[in-house]
Structure formats: C-alpha cells, structure tokens
Length: 313
Image (cartoon, rainbow, N blue to C red):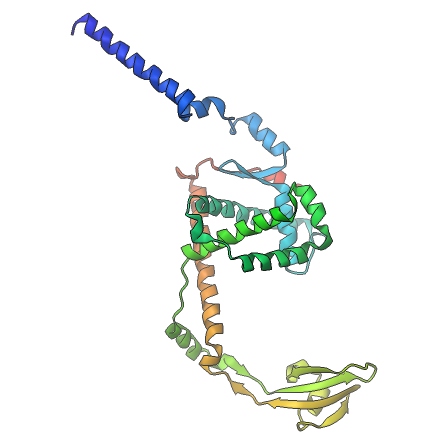
C-alpha cells in the first residue's frame, strides 16, 4: 500500500475518533462525558463525606441515613406497643441491622418499580388515605418535629413516601403470586376442622355494683372467674343475678358448635394466601441477599454499608 493511502486511512481514523469525542462530550453526553464530569462516589474522600453526613448505607449510590433507620425502628416498636427507651443497647443494635437490611431490599425493589410501567402498580387512594390515618395516629403531635428533622415538605411528602411504599408492596404482590383455590382451602379445613370449634357462649348485660352503666358482652368460661362463670352458665335467658360483686342479666345463649366450611372459607383462603405470599417474599429477599453476597455483575459494589455509623449510640 502506498504512503499516500496509508496517510489517508490514518487521517480518516483520526477524524472518526475526534468526531466521536466531540459527539460524546458536547452532544450526547455519553460515557466519556459522564466519567469526566460526574462526581467519583467511590473515592476515599467521597466515602468519608458520606459517613460524615450520617449515611449508613448506599444502594446504587442512593443513600440511607441513620435518621431514617431510627424512624423505622420507632415505627417498628410503636406497632408493638413499645418505645426505644424501653429496649436494651443490644436489642437496638440488632434491630438497626435487621431494619437496615429490609430498607436495602426495599430500595432494590424500588429500582425495579422505577423501570416498570407505573400504571401496573398504581396506588389506590382509599388505601393511601387509610395508611395516612394510621401514620398520623402513630406520630400524634410529633409530626412537625419529624418533618423538620427529616427535611420533609409537610404532609404532602409523607403522603408521597407512603404512596411509594404501597406501590412497592403492589409490585411484590404481582411478582409473588399466591393463589389459593377453594379446593385447597377445603382440604386444609378437613384436616383441621376440630380447630374451628366454638365453645358455648352467653351474651350478658352486667355492671359492677359501684358503677352505673351496664355493658353488654359475649362471654365463655375462659373469660370469667370460675365462681362467676358457674353462676352465669346456670342462668336461663332473661334471668338476673348478683354474682361476685356484679349485677348480671343473661340476654342470649349460643350453643357450642363446629363452624362449617362455608362460614370460615374466606378466612382460610386469606390466611393461606398470606402464608404463601410470606414464603414467596422470603424467597425473593433470599435471592436479593444471595446476589448481594456473591457480588455478581449486577450488584457488585452497588451496595455499601457503613456499619460504624449504624451501631454507635
């Protein structure tokens, strides 16, 4: 090949390379542009800054802050009638680790939801309203304090966050199928029909002799002191008696019986569906955790946990 032809080929290659660089840098903002202009989040300085900001984990560089874990822990304990002040240091340490693990998995699911058609996982407004009512009850008069601490923009942001949580739950419900047929429910019932036994119950109207208001209540022998139960279960409908410091009138008797399948069918189907979905969710989480532990090509270096920020009091 002659020298002029070689020079022409070289010039053509140079022109192509320069053209690619110009298009990447100034037109399409491609990978080279991003490499040069985006912050390097894996450097020692960037990680030190993240820790200084109170970040306990990053999922695809999206941060989870210590204050978020603390709020999740407060919610977890509130739903069980407790407060952080009633727990030990060891319990709080374990809870933070478990709850952070859940939050990491939720972020992984959130990423999946983002790339899915939003109409598939739309949030029902009644469901969102109910979730807001529960959260407002939990927070009580502390909402403004929490909003300021978390940098929220009023109740609208709380509603947005709850909506996102419900959307993730809808995504999981569709991904984790749990259909229970009537035949499966009936088979389950037949194996356990003795468990659907209701003892004899009596509806009574009663009050303490020291109180003015009567109350009506269904009772069985397990709900009453032995000496009162013996007297109540000897009464006939309409009879009145003074027993153990109470004035009692018997209103109605419900005989002991086994519940038929049709009476408890919906209850069984709901329970089995929840059980199967729970198993599916555990499997789904296991797959995410296993991928994380393996450090595969998808998740490698995309989940970072700063444990020292998590465990300190």
